[in-house]
Structure formats: structure tokens, C-alpha cells
Length: 351
Image (cartoon, rainbow, N blue to C red; front, side, top):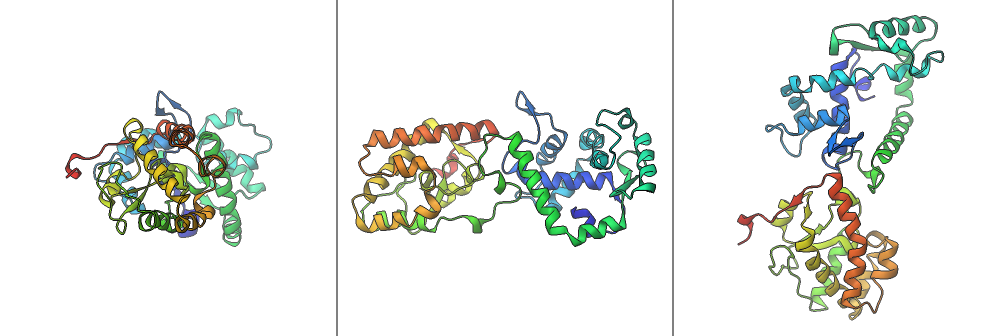
């Protein structure tokens, strides 16, 4: 779709697959979503495997722009050749199957590229297809988009792209059934979508009105309440929300190091939970802090277990921590199984 709108020229298979790599780039590299089955932790999907090759390019900048990724694809052309050729068995031939009522998915006509290309040409003379394929060598075969279809796409672009997005969401959800917030994981996360202001104000009010002492759970240092980051203990890119129970104050420099990784559960969960409990105690003992807490309900308190069991008055320390652990540990484990790496506190940052 993107290529059709930016060029009038015929599209090579190579161009199309390169665009596919970019379109799936953030879903795979940032959000660790799978595009197909994995065997012993390794992807069996050609597109996902190709993205993995490009991601390992030592010259690739992070975060990578589209131009950066395209340059890395060129640098790794030989390593990508097998995956690209494997993808062309299906792309873009099978997209035209909807026009072939008399041909089933298992029909032997699909076994020969020359035969199916000729068959497309024959059908196209009777019923104009979305595109036809111009034979060539390997990845230099080309797709020629019908001008009438192209105009139809232009005229209905918002509707068609929305339909494609819906299909992508369903595709990814089916292949990543335990992952939350798939709808937010089709493109780079937008900092504007983060809703942390009320949560930050809550922590500040706990210090200012409740005399709460806040320490970084990783370094142990006391934080300047005017200069801190709110860290998602389980990364935002996995949970796709800003729930209060997953947010913990952190030194800015350490947060820049942690980025998209998981902290060690055994070492840091109890510290995080204790810090959350101290905040919880201040919320229910100081009116000004309670007022700030109530302002968090819309954007930072949506999990039913949190509103009905965790943030209710009267929980003991152990009750609070047990509820938190019972609900966070499966989320943490799921993120780890999805491919999120563990973060270790860099020694050079411990000063």
C-alpha cells in the first residue's frame, strides 16, 4: 500500500519485501511480537527471521529510522537472500487468490511460478486484476498495479488502510495470545500517549505532604523529588499502559540504561513492592495525597484487581505485597517468555 502511493513505477519483489521488513520492524524489535511459530526459542517465520538478521547489524543506529533499516538491508543482502526468496513463494502471488474462484489453495498451478504468472495474465484479460506479475529473475520480478485499481486505492485509502490495520491486529493477537495491548504495537510508541503527569504528582505530594522518603530501588540512593523518572517495572512496550502499581520512581540516568528491559525479579521486586506499600500507606493517611491519588483513577488505575483489592484501605504490608506479586509475576514471566531481556545495573553507574 505504501509503495503504491509513493511511486508510479512497477515494484520489484525486492522492494516489496524490504517494505514488509520495515512495516513489521517495530512490532518485532521493540515489542517482541512473533509473526509465526517458534521452535526452541527460534523464529520459524521468514519475515521475522529476516528482521532478526537486520537488527544484529553492528552499524545499525538505535533507534533506527526507516532509512537506517533500508541501508542495513542493503548491507546484509547476501544473508537475507534465503529468507527473501522463501517469502516470494507466497508474496505477492497469494494475494491474488481471491480473484481465482476456480483455483484452490492446494492446486498444483501454484507450484510453478511461470505457470501461475501466465494464469494471472489469462484471467486479467477477462477480469482486471489488482496487479499482474512481470516475469524476471528471482527478486527482480515485478508487480504492475492496474491503473483503475490504483485509483480505487487512492480514493479509499483511509478505509483500506484501516481494514489492513484491523487484519494486522487480529493476525498478531492470534500469534501472541498472552500479550496485552496489541493495538498499540503496530508502530513506534508515542511519548504523547504516556499518561504519567498525575502519577508523578502523586509521588511528589507523598513526599511534600506525607513526608515520604523515596529511594531508587536499584541504586538505593534517595531521589530528588523534583528530578526523577517514573519507570515501568515491567516495560511499557509490553504492558502498554501506565498503571500506578507498575510505576516506580527512578534515577533518570539509570532509566536511560534500563530502557526496554526487565529488572531481576528476585533482586528488585520486593524493593519495588515495599516502596509501593509506603506510598499506599501515605495515600490513606493524608488527605492531600488521597486527593492526588483520586486524580490517577482515570489514566493510572484501570485494573480491577488493583482498584478492588490492592488500593483499598486496611491492607497489611504482607497482604499488599502478596496481591501485587500474585498479579504482577505472571505479567513479568509472560514478558520474559516473549523475549524481553534482563537488565543489570551497570557498575559504572553505581557511584
